Image 1 (tube, helix red, strand yellow):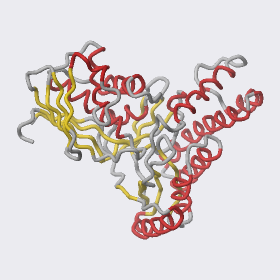
Image 2 (tube, rainbow, N blue to C red):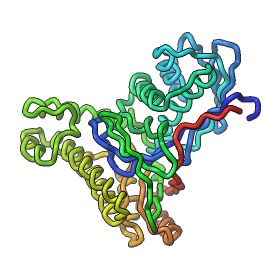
Image 3 (cartoon, rainbow, N blue to C red):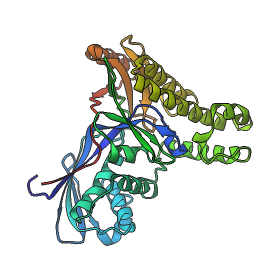
Image 4 (spheres, rainbow, N blue to C red):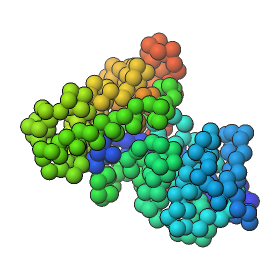
Length: 371
């Protein structure tokens, strides 16, 4: 890659706990992982952004003056959207060649889209001689995903991808963007990522529907109580004011309120090194995602069920938008191989799909290196 001027990486992410509360203004606990999107970029003196991939035969050329025209591309639409939003924010877009190397599996719930958006924006800034502020990059990347690709996402994925810190999880307030970095000290335990290998598509799934349901619930609740986001609703307030909500909306709000409380307790457990409590919270989170938020599905449920049957596993849950994707499990380090073998076999028998396991090493988010 010596011919390129910069190497830019942005991470995929896991979310320890706090699922589907980022767009409700809640606190979440994500971390950047070693699976990344890497962009090698160099100026080319034209008005084109030429895209190629290490894992795909496709080559795509984007016209800098017409970036709005690429929403329907199979590959390159995320890059085009990121470039357009960066351009609209007043930044210079230089013609360049970009080689993209993504190790975050697509459709896995590990935020390949955020890693692509964040790394693309940072690469455009680098080749134009600009300094890219990670928080600003995250916000622009979120805008690109919402306005260009149509996923009405919260800020968690892009923030974790850009601002992650090695060996730390982030206690991120998605309403204020206040962020506390907590050392990830799991003692004798390790986080195992397992992919159910049923790809999901957040646009075609019910992700946007869930977002609309929480917005409708907030509108109804604000007729009774002064709250500026759903995550501000306390458990006692939910008990008092949630009874009048339609049944489905009450279930959705019940998940949000409960998950926000689980995040609060999980942060305390992590600081205290109490892995048993953390594991129980993971299990409770999955049950809520399955029963109240209804975003899991047969395959993720089977994967979690297989994990939870193992005595070496303190807790397991779905992560990401849902309807497929990945789970995380808190597993005794000495039993990792036996755990993987059992879960692989049990899941294959239950679903016919073969699970894939990944390392959950926690790394920095955005990195920019001059070559």
